[in-house]
Length: 406
Image 1 (cartoon, rainbow, N blue to C red):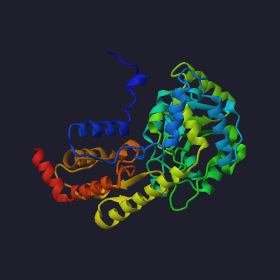
Image 2: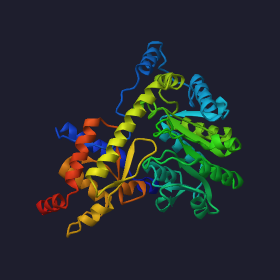
Image 3: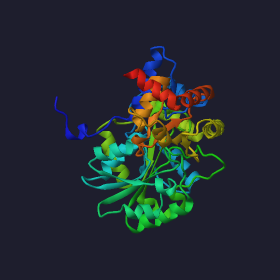
Image 4: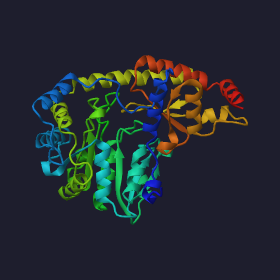
């Protein structure tokens, strides 16, 4: 069957595909260690589950307003005021089927064919594909030569007459890097003067390490509200990935357009899941703090292990989120032979085939010299997975693997 050009141009999500493959191999009885999944391994807090059960028992199983129930939107407004000092009305909020869905609606509402969105690289894998689906053009701004920091100089160097907006994801997936307040102030001032939309993806805002502080553009420049769309979700903060509840705050006319698009596609997010999200946002962050502390311990263990045991892989130290973005270029050099490993997909295939370890190729995030390893998995799995990777990167192990493949 002939597919549309739009459908043919879009790649499947690499992280979801690798996670699905790992789950399939586990079902087949393989002892898989997965560093691929971008979801916390903690159970959803009981008070959130209880809120969903109560909603079901009360019969909240019908359609809701397309953009979400008023109680949830009001709670989101309260969150923005408490966290950022930004005042929103319910009409400036939309609740969608996950943060990804909010972003998709946004790009569909914002972009005409040829409009450009600047994306700092490395970037989350879905940004580029969603922009292309909307007819836009993703403009990749490489930050690797600037210690993986996005700043005003890099922004200006990628600006054109077609630039519509900028994406800021802090802390970043995959690097875990936080934006500095000074860089945010510079970018905010520039965006306002040039009428650019800042799309701030804050989904990891509560998972910050080393007592660092999170900054959002709305915190550094209240006047930027009309040029900002803030996107978030309950997925990571409360370990609610399967609930599929995300939300966005932005200019009223843009949110209304996103609502129209949502009304003709998914309609409202699941009614009872919205009540779970309401309980989460109105509740305590005690669970999140404990989860963050555990993630920080795992991060520290992985960084120390790489430093002491796996010299050929050099990790970036993340400020937040739950990923290690690790440089494997030395592995390429050390495995130089007729069948050498010279790309991140090839290295990830080798890890999975020979050592039953899953990782996400860095090329999917815009940098082929890296892999992404999630530490949102049990400590025992992390330890076993790192032991296998240590074995895998030995030049002799690689040589034997390719010899046996012949």
